[in-house]
Image 1: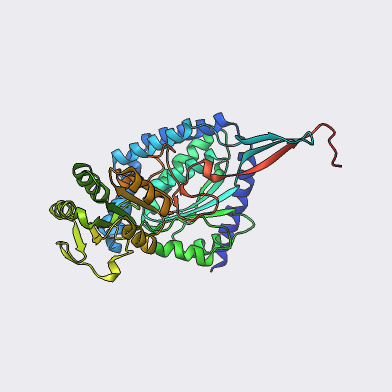
Image 2 (image 1 turned 60 degrees about the horizontal axis):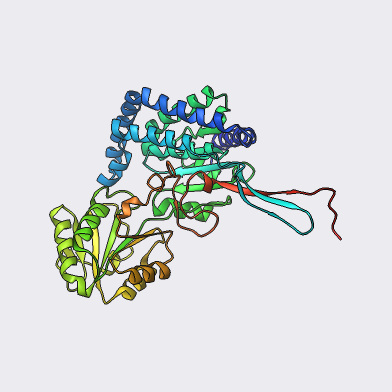
Length: 415
């Protein structure tokens, strides 16, 4: 690592720590004003953002990105509007900082409150999707945290413009511009440095593919909120409604194939084989390659490697199972603990499925493409945490807080 990178990152970390101290007690209305102004700036500068994105798209094509990754990278006016709507939605949420999570009195006379408090400085490392710049910046700010953003090399220009808009919002609200910083280089050495900045960064959030998350988990000395791959299963039960199932599975796979909530594996009850085959035929007619196990007709036979694969493409695996417990066993073996779903009209079967699978998100009769913080009412998400510590599932502003205890007595002493 060059001395220049180390010096740059130390400077960014130092400024973030100073900003975090100010943000910890920043008024709720100032944070709301900053995010609303940032949304206005993004919309006013949408043509510039789209022009910057065209440079990123060219970079992505030259790099040989897949169609799904190019879709993640692309910004148009509708997506920028969605990004602006997300900023405004986060702005309108209640401020989590200072929220009393629990309060109780003790026989000793003490009053104890557990209240939300910012984490401090958050480092976010992400790939391809430039809108994560806005989502992560907004959620960290709302929770009173400073954030250091490291976007993917593909989204370098788009992320830079969006970051400028976020800083415009901070200026408009009189908040420190160092509250949201973007690492201004594609050099990977900057990532390696951030992962070890224990004096400046309190938590790292990686948002990307298995390779990125694995790298972060191996090398980080800073605590990590892991966002692992989305190996998403849908189990079609013998009591599934045919029309619901065909509509839901089609949406879950084809709406956007390159997002982590896209379905990657169908598990079909043997007594629902006819319905399952109809679903497979629907998918193939829509251009999806279906890799099938024994007893099903698809595009190509599945291999052992197809179970537990995140395709992020117009590909899905399909397999017959004997019953719901067969589906549960398969999911528990191959799932990444992100999102798994069941299609059934049987309440007892659905409860059995929900109880015995421990993924961060479980769904019934709904498209897995709803596995998204915005769809959960969080305004946006910084990622979907698949671990079990601190934050799990969609990570919104509340999940980016810790807590402290406020203990009040009246001259109270301990006997």
